[in-house]
Length: 148
Image 1 (cartoon, rainbow, N blue to C red):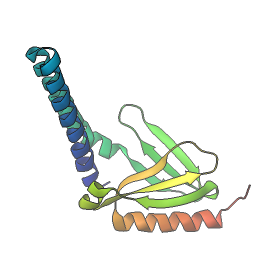
Image 2 (cartoon, rainbow, N blue to C red):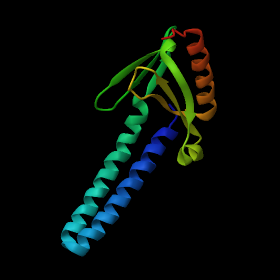
Image 3 (cartoon, rainbow, N blue to C red):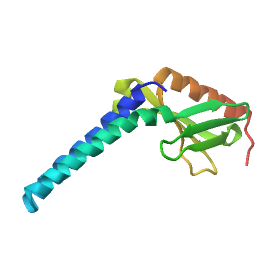
């Protein structure tokens, strides 16, 4: 996966920690004590630093491979997961990008199946690679269609 995924995660989590730290700090300062407001802000900075470090591990944890009859996805930093999606069960394969992903030039390929509640997705691909993967998966899902 490209390093843009790590930067995406870093920016999103840092923004969340910044908002939580500022809002929580202001509220604690107004209604409690400046000491607790400072502790809250420091805690938000520690969480932001931890998430900044973990973003690289998160990026390296994602992987996928296309086998002859199914798509294998693996991800997870603390708990590793392996998701197997048979091509014949794929109903919708689409490419999504939010504004930040577009700015970084990455996209997410999302695979939906009829019976699965799992979120099968390949994150952080360059947009051209994501479009090619979507086209390959859609073609394979049509050729492996099992019907219900």
